[in-house]
Length: 87
Image (tube, rainbow, N blue to C red; front, top):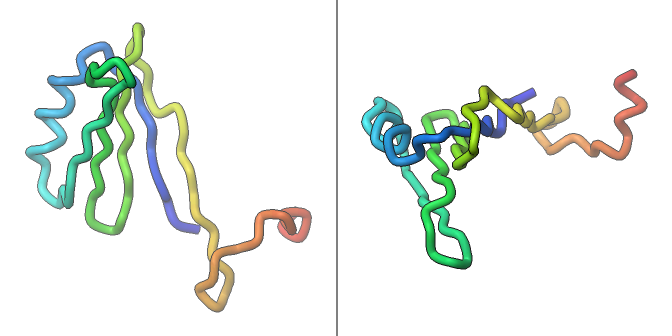
């Protein structure tokens, strides 16, 4: 299993964007804007292809989602429709 992304919420989007952009191993930062044009989130990709998604929230929140990619023994993505095989 491989970690795909982590999503967190913050009241101070600009401050966290500045902090995370300085961390070693950051590959790129993509800012996301609402249809009205306000800064609503940013996505950062780290070494190992881990994606951190930070979005504006009224209340600070820890990780809201930890999304894993599952690969079979051949390195191909696992078909989640057959999840019953894992249970």
